[in-house]
Image (cartoon, rainbow, N blue to C red; front, top):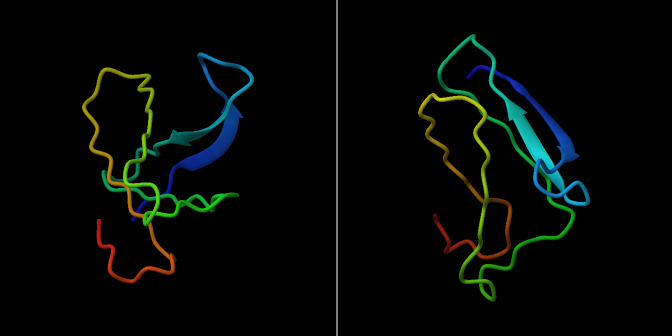
Length: 77
């Protein structure tokens, strides 16, 4: 799997909000990144999470989000 880059930056719509910035390399179509959260997401309590993405190019993108390393082994996706 190819590797682009990831950095934390100020949100394009709210400079007080720090967000993740993924930059895809041209080496391969499939690329992956991981983020270690400072605060975990408890899916037994939070039954809905919201992710916002800003796309800076006209190309179509598929994004897959995988949550792992939690304490509840029964959660798949």
